[in-house]
Length: 155
Image (cartoon, rainbow, N blue to C red):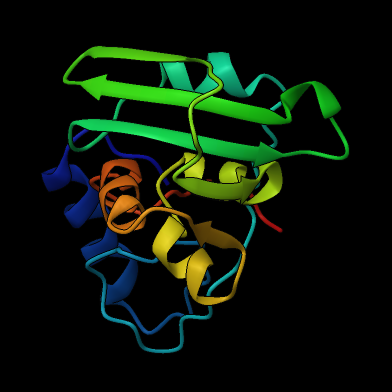
């Protein structure tokens, strides 16, 4: 089910849920629908193969200036330190020799790339390491999106 407006989306759900039928659907985790018997499904994965370019074309929720140390054993050309600077629509990302503020594996950076899970959540499970105080909170906030990432394909 795809709708072009919030009103159409709500109308379609009202229609589907009005009758005595069972409805099975994949919905975003931040959907305003009543939770009921919903079970989360992880079906959206991203693998960054060009960290510098991927981070430069993305937009960020808050201004940011951070040096990331990225480790990538699968795509070794991604390994290294990157200065990521974002200020509104202007974003740059380039290799640097400056000291790293956060250390992250490319797989975890891919997980956070679309806005979720947050870098802060990944740090709680030791998948991101803060090397400079405050860098994690700033970077995690900048990577967040307005909505949780979602792809409606069945798993």
